[in-house]
Length: 230
Ligand SMILES: NC(=O)c1ccc[n+]([C@@H]2O[C@H](COP(=O)([O-])OP(=O)(O)OC[C@H]3O[C@@H](n4cnc5c(N)ncnc54)[C@H](OP(=O)(O)O)[C@@H]3O)[C@@H](O)[C@H]2O)c1
Image (cartoon, rainbow, N blue to C red; front, side, top):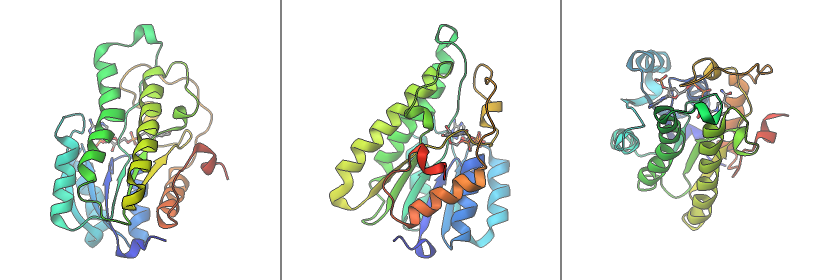
């Protein structure tokens, strides 16, 4: 078991639907959190809401090469970290023949390259017994037409997490790859390109966040999409 009441957890993508819900759930479990997002106003609003449980905040664009490492540095300098949860991400829709370079760059940079850079930076500060949780997606298990770049980025992230988890086993640092099904955060309504197809009703962000935080507390090692169906 991980004692979240004694933990300091850095949450990236805290301004988002899932990241915000995870941050609130961590605080409700007694954890202290450091929060990162791109939008300074919404980040400060969440920090004000969570009050004294917030160690520090860091505004960053994670597509920049130094973005992930700068966020880790700010949080770790403020207080020793127990773990990191990365819930930043974007989605793009459309046929591959319509996929332009800017869209491809943004999806791959934020959904695949940034989490790898984040892991590299976080390994230096996560202690034995600590964790790195990366929010991938169900499309890593079943690629979706009309979401090829997003599917490829998430499948790449899930593969990276599996390899890293094995590398870190001896150091007793847990890598938790989280692959939620469609969730009603509004992500699909603000794609970086294209338009979402008609989607079935998604999961409630609160229940997804509850499942993620329970997995962190219970030292689970994988969170496939099937873990969210119960
Ligand atoms: N919602 C779903 O159906 C679903 C399903 C499976 C997996 N996921 C994954 O869950 C994660 C969270 O998604 P969500 O549903 O919570 O979406 P969301 O509400 O749109 O949140 C996305 C988060 O990513 C941040 N972000 C976007 N571009 C960024 C950049 N360049 N630099 C730094 N941060 C950036 C946003 O920051 P700002 O708002 O501050 O710009 C926000 O905090 C994503 O990785 C997504 O792929 C979502």
